[in-house]
Length: 452
Image (cartoon, rainbow, N blue to C red; front, side, top):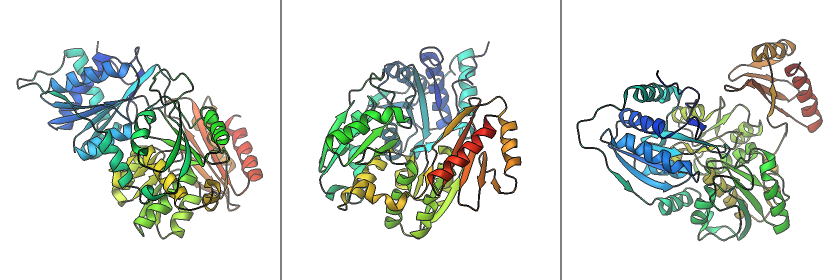
């Protein structure tokens, strides 16, 4: 009976319980499928700190080399280090990580040469079908010479490249920073990147440990930044940085111990990128703050709104030749980084902006932090479509937009978006308004409709 991989081949990557759902046999079959799909004589791999990554990456390499394709192993690395490898070496890549997921998970993020993404519509569906067939029938026969496996150290080159992309980072004033790596790959990359910068760094949970003994490496959940917020205050630091497990996302804490909204960070970086590239296009997804397109327009740029999800952001960046893109989930994309996302580049931009002036971070961000936001509120529902239809009927006299879920916009200056989860019976609500009282009123009205 043919194996069904639909439960682990997601929209953007492969991810599942390991062991249980993802194992060496599946990794080997995916390696062979990717070797044939990618059409390159070499593929680069990297892995995060999860123990199962060693076995999975080794099996994947066996699949790749079985088809006559060489494997370059970068070893331990963050996801953006893998993108750096795929970009500088101009070869396809495979990153073994489950990102912010709990310890029992692992996965594979794939890209083509130049860090071009591979998603459901750009290869993952075919790779899944091929891998299912290979699990049933065996790997395809190859009558040439098998590929080889070699190792290449890329951390030093990555660290140097990241600093080159952020103007002014080498000449900032001395800053006191606390970094929470969450026992993830930030603990590996941050020391290399920060070396030589005028930073007094307090390290939290830098030991690579895929069991995440202190907290999950998922800074979008405020419970996981509580330790960092307290430490920023106790150390009287200028800012704090929190990375997720594979360090492709970064969240920022200001000197008051307050979480900086990713939308505010998007607006700040957009302003900086427009300083480097005047008149350029900036991408933002539809749940970022209204402040983002306002700041972009005020600084002579062109804001372009997209659906939520990195495949949509990257596609729009390529289509519009945008220099930067930001998502409210903490993903930040840079044209000079092959349109790929990097938590490290976001962190360096925050440091460069703060260290290039004399004020505090909260003072610096005042002009970018303009509205009251609810954050994402998730509700379990029985019938997603029926609940969205009820909201649509209730707000029929207002501006309605269905680019991604349903966005309702009021002339009073508030808006909200309701989107259905692709994988769970959830509706996700985001609300923004000119003040907290209005935001809470609109949020509660929408939740009453969502939750019946």
